[in-house]
Length: 186
Image (tube, rainbow, N blue to C red; front, top):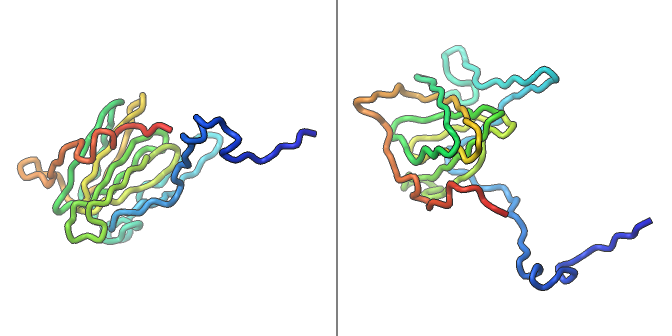
Protein backbone atom coordinates (compact mmCIF):
# COMPACT_ATOMS: atom_id res chain seq x y z
CA UNK A 1 0.00 0.00 0.00
CA UNK A 2 1.25 3.47 -0.85
CA UNK A 3 1.40 5.85 2.10
CA UNK A 4 0.73 9.43 1.07
CA UNK A 5 2.31 12.15 3.16
CA UNK A 6 0.76 15.60 3.41
CA UNK A 7 2.67 18.39 1.68
CA UNK A 8 3.17 22.04 2.48
CA UNK A 9 4.51 24.90 0.35
CA UNK A 10 8.09 24.07 1.38
CA UNK A 11 7.73 20.76 -0.53
CA UNK A 12 7.68 22.71 -3.81
CA UNK A 13 10.54 24.33 -5.62
CA UNK A 14 11.18 27.93 -4.57
CA UNK A 15 10.15 29.28 -7.98
CA UNK A 16 6.69 27.73 -7.49
CA UNK A 17 6.30 28.38 -3.78
CA UNK A 18 6.46 32.17 -4.23
CA UNK A 19 3.82 32.06 -7.00
CA UNK A 20 1.18 30.18 -4.97
CA UNK A 21 -2.21 31.74 -4.32
CA UNK A 22 -5.67 30.53 -3.36
CA UNK A 23 -8.77 31.38 -5.37
CA UNK A 24 -11.39 33.39 -3.48
CA UNK A 25 -14.45 31.17 -2.93
CA UNK A 26 -16.18 33.46 -0.46
CA UNK A 27 -19.73 34.57 -1.12
CA UNK A 28 -19.66 37.84 -3.04
CA UNK A 29 -21.70 40.79 -1.82
CA UNK A 30 -24.80 41.75 -3.78
CA UNK A 31 -25.78 45.22 -4.94
CA UNK A 32 -28.73 46.57 -2.95
CA UNK A 33 -31.98 45.53 -4.65
CA UNK A 34 -30.40 43.10 -7.14
CA UNK A 35 -31.83 39.60 -6.84
CA UNK A 36 -30.61 36.30 -8.25
CA UNK A 37 -33.61 33.97 -8.13
CA UNK A 38 -33.11 30.23 -8.60
CA UNK A 39 -35.86 28.80 -10.78
CA UNK A 40 -37.18 25.27 -10.99
CA UNK A 41 -35.39 23.24 -13.63
CA UNK A 42 -36.36 19.66 -14.24
CA UNK A 43 -33.98 17.36 -16.09
CA UNK A 44 -34.72 13.85 -17.29
CA UNK A 45 -33.37 11.51 -19.94
CA UNK A 46 -35.49 13.27 -22.58
CA UNK A 47 -34.25 16.82 -21.93
CA UNK A 48 -35.04 19.63 -19.52
CA UNK A 49 -37.76 22.08 -18.59
CA UNK A 50 -37.39 25.36 -16.71
CA UNK A 51 -40.18 27.55 -15.40
CA UNK A 52 -39.23 31.13 -16.24
CA UNK A 53 -42.16 33.03 -14.73
CA UNK A 54 -45.49 32.49 -13.08
CA UNK A 55 -48.04 35.26 -12.75
CA UNK A 56 -50.46 35.90 -9.90
CA UNK A 57 -54.15 36.64 -10.44
CA UNK A 58 -53.30 40.35 -11.02
CA UNK A 59 -50.71 39.62 -13.72
CA UNK A 60 -47.70 40.33 -11.49
CA UNK A 61 -44.71 38.03 -11.29
CA UNK A 62 -45.03 35.61 -8.38
CA UNK A 63 -41.26 35.81 -7.73
CA UNK A 64 -41.46 39.65 -7.63
CA UNK A 65 -45.06 40.59 -6.77
CA UNK A 66 -44.53 44.36 -7.21
CA UNK A 67 -43.14 43.86 -10.75
CA UNK A 68 -45.78 44.36 -13.44
CA UNK A 69 -44.57 43.03 -16.82
CA UNK A 70 -45.20 45.48 -19.67
CA UNK A 71 -42.94 43.96 -22.33
CA UNK A 72 -41.03 40.74 -22.93
CA UNK A 73 -38.11 40.63 -25.37
CA UNK A 74 -35.84 37.97 -26.85
CA UNK A 75 -32.22 38.79 -27.66
CA UNK A 76 -29.40 36.75 -29.18
CA UNK A 77 -25.76 37.65 -28.69
CA UNK A 78 -23.18 36.43 -31.13
CA UNK A 79 -19.73 35.32 -29.93
CA UNK A 80 -17.48 38.25 -29.04
CA UNK A 81 -20.36 40.68 -28.41
CA UNK A 82 -20.31 43.07 -25.45
CA UNK A 83 -23.47 45.06 -24.72
CA UNK A 84 -22.63 47.44 -21.91
CA UNK A 85 -23.26 49.58 -20.01
CA UNK A 86 -26.70 51.08 -19.73
CA UNK A 87 -29.14 51.94 -16.97
CA UNK A 88 -32.71 53.14 -16.60
CA UNK A 89 -34.31 55.89 -14.52
CA UNK A 90 -37.79 54.31 -14.48
CA UNK A 91 -37.46 50.74 -15.72
CA UNK A 92 -36.55 47.53 -13.95
CA UNK A 93 -35.43 44.39 -15.79
CA UNK A 94 -35.76 40.67 -15.16
CA UNK A 95 -33.26 38.67 -17.24
CA UNK A 96 -33.26 34.98 -18.06
CA UNK A 97 -30.32 33.40 -19.90
CA UNK A 98 -31.09 30.03 -21.44
CA UNK A 99 -29.57 27.29 -19.25
CA UNK A 100 -27.68 25.75 -22.20
CA UNK A 101 -26.09 29.12 -23.05
CA UNK A 102 -23.58 31.20 -21.09
CA UNK A 103 -23.20 34.97 -20.72
CA UNK A 104 -20.96 37.08 -18.49
CA UNK A 105 -23.05 39.63 -16.59
CA UNK A 106 -21.69 42.91 -15.26
CA UNK A 107 -23.52 45.23 -12.85
CA UNK A 108 -22.55 48.30 -10.87
CA UNK A 109 -24.50 50.58 -8.62
CA UNK A 110 -24.71 54.19 -9.86
CA UNK A 111 -27.28 55.32 -7.27
CA UNK A 112 -25.44 57.84 -5.06
CA UNK A 113 -27.77 57.29 -2.08
CA UNK A 114 -27.58 53.49 -2.24
CA UNK A 115 -25.79 51.60 0.56
CA UNK A 116 -23.90 49.75 -2.18
CA UNK A 117 -23.03 52.82 -4.28
CA UNK A 118 -20.26 52.07 -6.80
CA UNK A 119 -20.21 48.34 -5.91
CA UNK A 120 -19.67 45.93 -8.82
CA UNK A 121 -20.91 42.45 -9.56
CA UNK A 122 -19.52 40.12 -12.21
CA UNK A 123 -20.88 36.60 -12.75
CA UNK A 124 -22.00 34.07 -15.35
CA UNK A 125 -25.65 33.24 -16.02
CA UNK A 126 -26.91 30.20 -17.90
CA UNK A 127 -24.17 27.58 -17.70
CA UNK A 128 -26.55 24.76 -16.82
CA UNK A 129 -28.69 26.67 -14.32
CA UNK A 130 -32.10 28.32 -14.53
CA UNK A 131 -31.80 31.69 -12.78
CA UNK A 132 -33.74 34.94 -13.05
CA UNK A 133 -31.87 38.20 -12.43
CA UNK A 134 -33.77 41.25 -11.17
CA UNK A 135 -32.03 44.57 -11.91
CA UNK A 136 -33.44 47.68 -10.21
CA UNK A 137 -33.44 51.10 -11.86
CA UNK A 138 -30.15 52.99 -11.46
CA UNK A 139 -28.01 49.84 -11.53
CA UNK A 140 -25.85 49.88 -14.67
CA UNK A 141 -25.91 46.56 -16.46
CA UNK A 142 -24.27 44.82 -19.37
CA UNK A 143 -23.40 41.42 -20.70
CA UNK A 144 -20.78 39.76 -22.87
CA UNK A 145 -20.61 36.57 -24.88
CA UNK A 146 -16.99 35.51 -24.50
CA UNK A 147 -17.53 32.02 -25.85
CA UNK A 148 -17.77 30.46 -29.33
CA UNK A 149 -21.54 29.93 -29.65
CA UNK A 150 -24.45 32.39 -29.86
CA UNK A 151 -26.26 32.88 -26.54
CA UNK A 152 -29.92 33.69 -26.01
CA UNK A 153 -31.81 35.61 -23.38
CA UNK A 154 -35.36 36.59 -22.58
CA UNK A 155 -35.97 39.69 -20.54
CA UNK A 156 -39.03 41.23 -19.01
CA UNK A 157 -39.39 44.94 -18.27
CA UNK A 158 -41.94 46.97 -16.36
CA UNK A 159 -42.45 49.57 -19.10
CA UNK A 160 -42.73 49.45 -22.86
CA UNK A 161 -39.78 50.67 -24.91
CA UNK A 162 -40.40 54.06 -26.51
CA UNK A 163 -37.92 54.80 -29.31
CA UNK A 164 -38.79 58.53 -29.32
CA UNK A 165 -38.09 58.85 -25.56
CA UNK A 166 -35.99 55.85 -24.53
CA UNK A 167 -35.36 55.31 -20.82
CA UNK A 168 -31.92 53.95 -21.61
CA UNK A 169 -28.90 55.89 -20.47
CA UNK A 170 -25.51 54.75 -21.81
CA UNK A 171 -22.15 54.55 -20.10
CA UNK A 172 -18.88 53.48 -21.77
CA UNK A 173 -18.51 49.70 -22.15
CA UNK A 174 -15.09 49.88 -20.51
CA UNK A 175 -15.97 52.22 -17.61
CA UNK A 176 -14.82 49.45 -15.22
CA UNK A 177 -11.76 48.72 -17.35
CA UNK A 178 -11.34 46.62 -20.49
CA UNK A 179 -10.27 43.62 -18.43
CA UNK A 180 -13.68 43.54 -16.71
CA UNK A 181 -15.01 41.83 -19.87
CA UNK A 182 -12.27 39.23 -20.28
CA UNK A 183 -12.11 35.66 -19.07
CA UNK A 184 -10.11 35.58 -15.85
CA UNK A 185 -7.12 33.30 -16.16
CA UNK A 186 -5.84 31.12 -13.39
